[in-house]
View 1 (cartoon, rainbow, N blue to C red):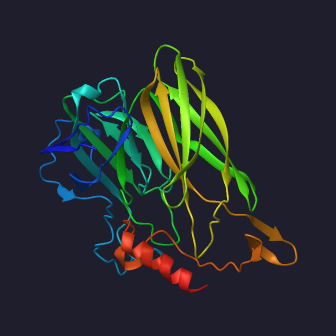
View 2: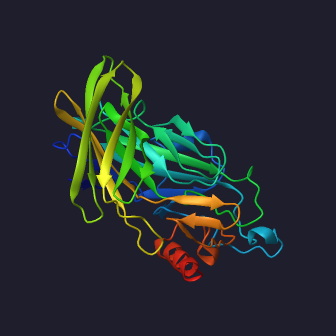
View 3: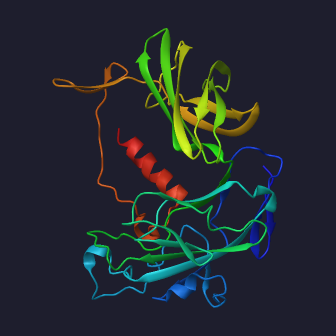
Length: 338
């Protein structure tokens, strides 16, 4: 993947790659904690005095601490309105492609503007959401994205954090593409000698004419070896989507288990007229489970005791902004509880 950075904005360029590309969209943001007018979303707005931040970001964790505040939410100033802005440039060679921005979490009730126009929104502060930026961006020119977060309508019994507290990703894709979260893998039959893998793939056609597509799915075992493949195809109407189904058999499946999490990969390739237009990889595992009335939970035909904790999304004194090592440590502690 070829990635070019042009300061002070970002230039995404990958002319030779026909498939979708996703980019880390976390650098180069500016932030202001203030209830500003909607003009703060326009490209000409002067944000030179705003704080420079890198996402994920929690505007409240640094305080100041309010001794008279709500003790259930750590007495930190999480209530308010915050604005984020960033500029970026798209390669003119990508004109005609689809552009999406994925937010993994914004606290709370975000409004997303691109070049001064509202491109999307989300109610509440949890769960990821996607913004279709295609109608609002300009290729080969500077673009401005602005996000307004408002936590004043949000209520919480614990510290919720504030702002864009999870990563942001930009994806540039062809008009014929695998839908977002459009690959659904199940394992309806699992035996000692063989297992069945069923794959449902949703293909979107954003062109103004029908297209004939073929898809190929290749399954790789945990060591990375190609073990089986299958093809399918069909015609998709203009501005429509279609779901294609495939069924494959994997011999001698290696089970996913707690201490040996064996993971397989399904690579899905989409072609139009023989040309590769999209590809996605989906990881999955083989395991059986059962909740019995007299012996609890069984994983792969043996009883496993389930233990859990009351764990919120924030990282305590580190704040709500996602911290990879802190999350790893939490998982390690819970694994040691077994």
